[in-house]
Length: 122
Figure 1 (cartoon, rainbow, N blue to C red):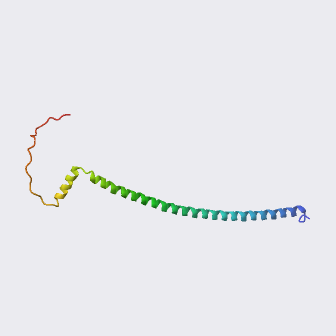
Figure 2: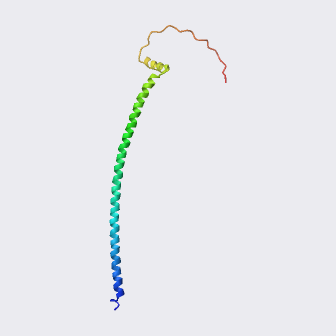
Figure 3: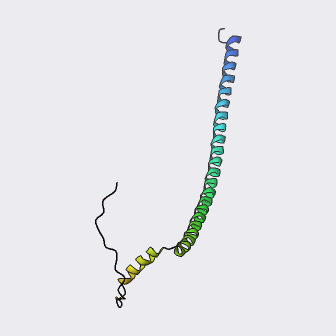
């Protein structure tokens, strides 16, 4: 009589429903996990594509900066050549003298001032 009692029947029905619900929750969690992994893969692909685009943009910007710098340095050299001091020309003559033979001596110059000992002033 114990085996055919209504309490035993209800408890086995409740256990069956609990098992069915647990299996459903487990499958639902697996399905949601798969969906999340898929969304993360899509997000990863979008990020990689954006990084490639920004990399190309950065390379173009860097090349433009280098081109501007080269143009500026060429213009700077032109301006510097117009502002050379006589000392620079003298130094250029010294380097030229190594390549060219000496010319005829010029007329003697005026005699310089007589030097003397000076007292140091502090």
